[in-house]
Image (cartoon, rainbow, N blue to C red):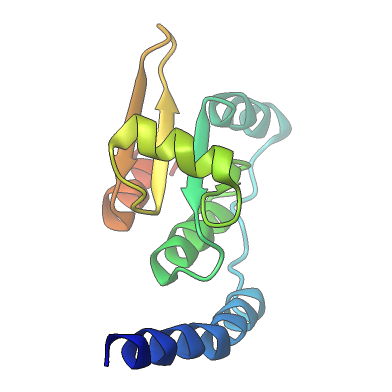
Length: 128
């Protein structure tokens, strides 16, 4: 029975995954337009951020859409298909839960922010 349930959900992910990615592509928000100097400052600040994500995770899609609407060039790291990214996420947080935003502070300390709502709130507070 366990095998049947796993097979069902794996098949469901295979069918719905491409549909979710297509919907994400078709509903991309228009990004914020900033002056060149302001955007350069935002780009500089985003270099200390990295989003660990799965491509078809609905919560990750929510965060990526917010990044697009705020015009944030945050590095996206695939924790589903790249073992090194998954291992870094596991080492940093103790779990492989995505989405997870890695924030490297100016003093070198690293903070990990999990939960899509918390990540969106952080991005809006910092960059909106």
